[in-house]
Length: 521
Image (cartoon, rainbow, N blue to C red; front, side, top):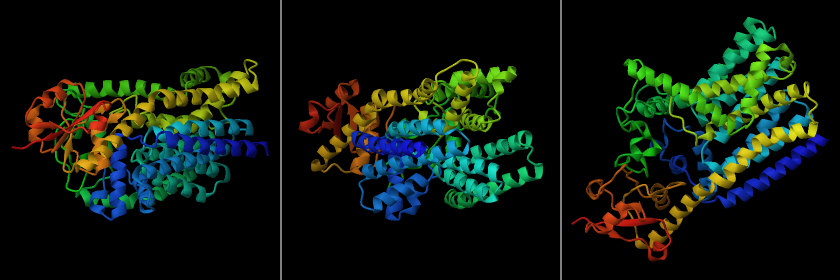
């Protein structure tokens, strides 16, 4: 009864927080959001040739398309889908903690943690990472249920959910392959599961996973003309390559023309020009790969700390448990090893390619598994020191909630502000009948205001250069160019006869972005 009441209050708090945060960040955008929302518009409009993209998983765009078909504006649809993803993450996480065998006290604590951290995560980005976290948590809960009841139905359900996770983000596929092998080997080694049953369980899981995954892989293969599971891993590896060539996403470094009907080539960067590389090409590339993977491993640990502050303490305790049997007392009672296998597998997915600290969202799926590891840490410490029960629970919860609170208060407002700038600019430009391609990033701390403005106007965005000149802008084919106010480029354009500053008068004195019309003589 006490647990049910705590879960109810946690869910009420979560929904209330989601509504408040959703309203506060109603204009928040990110670069990936533009792609997901545009693809959703194509699905909603039946433009399936434009909707298919090997770089982005389709599930989030499908859900957004349903909201768009219901008549919601794009950003309202995004806020609704992200809020529902957060609720599903909460429910799936609680089910996982219960199935993992945590006591009622720890399930209640974990429920509050998941409810609170999901609020800022739901508005941090319009991306499928929170939905991915929910599906993976629920899939793992079914695997744990199969471990207890030995029902193949649970294993099948886990595979189907993992297949849906693949439709959310392609990284789920290799992660699923790695995790099911580790999971079954762990059960075979430590639970004396018969080898034949372990193999059968893994095959059933993989067969179920393929049911949602195979049709999408078939669609991508036909779309691109060659076998394609996803293009995201290849591109992520490419842009992390050696600095001997320009390897970053060309949509942000070069002027270009997106495919007809698209706002930005970022909707499907798979066909854009990249400079692929391989560590097998030459010794220098192999050394670069080794350094990259080593650095990404360190960076991943820091990013895990932004989810769970006590992660380094858990690693230290695990080292002690490996060396001292007394520290292993709770390892058999809690599925700590499978939880750590999941975290390790998730980390491994991001070692070979492009990884930066602001992409904390990549590690949202680790949160409930980190909580299980945190419970093991607290219970182990309490066997050696008389830590008060209430204090230890609050300390563990704080290790998750404090980083999420810092994200909400100090890092996310800039993203909201950039979206607001773009919306205000688009609304002011509509009476001027601004149509035709735009260019220029006009980057602010919260994102590319130029791209966001093009999204709000529904006009093509032709990208940007690192150091654009009046000549390169004229050659880009754009009709309008956006640039940050007060920059040397803005001053140069204002003195160039081929450019006319048309920044609406109501915004000219307070808006950080200038809009120039390109005059073609």
